[in-house]
Image (cartoon, rainbow, N blue to C red; front, side, top):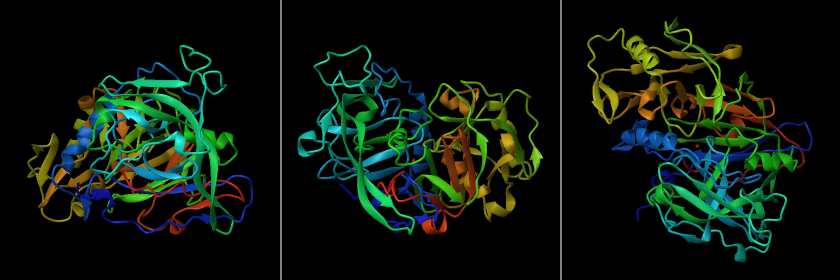
Length: 461
């Protein structure tokens, strides 16, 4: 099997800058890469069509859980995600490549006894399986343990199970374990040293359907969704870090940074996270401007409830808008280009254009509650395909069956430091060049204990 595309070039190691403030909390960082191949800012081959396929698979799923897990609560491992990282589990530590996903809450890895699990993929040459017998720090979670909340209750002498099923036929099931998660402790002088913390996670014994896709398989998933049942919640409960994380995704080079902990610099303006029935991050969008002019839309089009509104999800690639918003937006963007003919390609609206799109097409601005704005530039939303061919990155949400939802994917939140503050229930961002090392991007508040790199993030949030 050919070497994975995403690992063909390695981004240089990142450095965390710690503030002089000493305390009990600390932080972690990941180096990230996209799953989809980009060369010089251009999508190649069928990758541009794969963007929609990925988003469709991600949002068609609905969780039909037969068991609920504590701490590592297993919800929806939506799709394949865009980013993955390597972490260490067990004693001695074994490296696993796991998806980091802001749209789910699960933390699980494939187990050594997993049935029908792929053993290799196009992303990884060979998958790694968790073997509790090979780790002296591994411990099964029993049904009578307080952290086991399996429903219906299981036999008190047995192991604590989980099962999660999905409407597209994907299913994962297995048992809970506790073991050591290995990372690096960050000190106030910016130096790190290895350390570990005991965490609870799922050991998958059977995967079926979409989770058994050898083309896109990785070793597991770490969810950072809007939930109290995440790895981040475990670390915060143990006093290792605050419930805050951030990312800075580089759309040009396909890499970036994922960090755990409080961001001190750059300053980030925020908007409230709205409570909802999903693990996504729901916010209040007020209006959309194109070249400084506000789109004239129905007053209730941006109404926010527990089931509708504007969701931010870095695991979604594109941006999906209600049909009326999409129609008005595309008219406004191409208003000064009556000579351009749009044609369908891979279900995108595409066109041929000579010259700089950044000079000839408008900036789009999303306006949120608390005066937070999100600027989207032509190089963000016009996806260059090949040979001066461009495709409009915004999509009709009806294609995913979400007529009343707005989904903002990494197309518009790349090239920005995005901060998710779960303690204040707020999210915010500021523009930044994410190709620079972390020392040039983030100043993270930390102390003598806590979390720094959980590994290098190599794949696609």
